[in-house]
Image 1 (cartoon, rainbow, N blue to C red):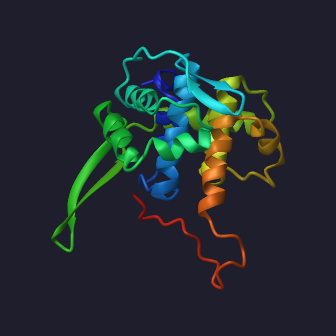
Image 2: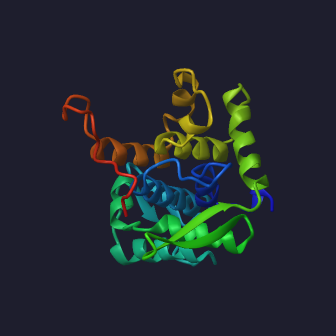
Length: 219
């Protein structure tokens, strides 16, 4: 399976799971919202939504043939407004979105699903890589950019999503992140994720123990 067949959201879900054991690298709530931003970027690339000033609006109501993307597009049409990208992340209500993408990629042979019960009672579904080639291809693409290669516009968006979600720092030594910040500064999808994370994360000093509102057990 080639990464050329993947959407932004599928690429992000790959990057967000550790190659060795499939462990998720960022909290559920951040991953869900980041996947929604990725879907908006996918719809923009397909000409279904567009920026109008600071807002994102539907430009073409026709379905694209992808169930996840079409669900987002339908929601945007139903809302019937132009909103900032960060506001759309909340309006679209991305609860448990990450599970849809894990199952979707499991059906395509990228992940394998294992079911068990915690304490013998609570059903648990875990995913590990069955085919690491797509992950390695996407990761290598970002690695080349971090080593100095000039990215195209699509790669900048993927880089922004990975960076703003916190995934990128788990995969690479960013050495301060100056180059990454310069590359992704103007990417609206990444900025939408950053706005969400900034608003839902406590500032240093807000809590004595430095805990944040982001929890790995989020919805």
